[in-house]
Image (cartoon, rainbow, N blue to C red; front, top):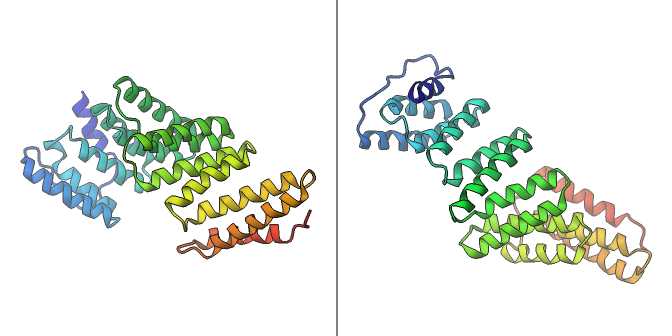
Length: 279
């Protein structure tokens, strides 16, 4: 029954105007070669062509995790979300301790603003990895933190971002995931009005990537809010914090690879604080 189901699943989307020859007895070497060709097509954003490559050999390797995973991503890119989710879930069932499927499925759910489904699949992955005494990656905790921030739960976001920090300190983690952990921690502290702790987390992030516009902008906003909180009780200190906010916003504006939307946002932040009356 499982084989019948997966065969139907792979053919739920129209394959185009030409027939796809399905091989049911392809060799392992041929499947691997075909898979690599499909990956290249995926990288070229030729998602339906990549799917057709997979369909060509799928009957010879019905339980191939890598074919299933690639099929899921091809469907996701074409916004076939239901089919993509089914592929991810079958892959997860095949390799329940492989966290990549859980993480990517959660990201697809986030694309659809389905935060509950994203949280549930991540929580399941976290339980399975903990029970197996396996490493939980920082990226998983980062996504959980993002969901908590979206739900206006800064305390929950703080907990998850700190778990992410602990995870990347235990095991080698890419700079991107490390930086996100610190950004999320900073955002959580900022939401809790703990400005000095937000500054510490974001400054740590800046030490990893000194020209990161997101970090610089968040530092600007941290000092802007800090200045506002001190306006009445300590005007001199408020002025110093305000000056730092302006400096960080200006630094953010001259970083490379800024999108026009983000540039406009930072400009708006700078204009707002520059036109604010001094304490």
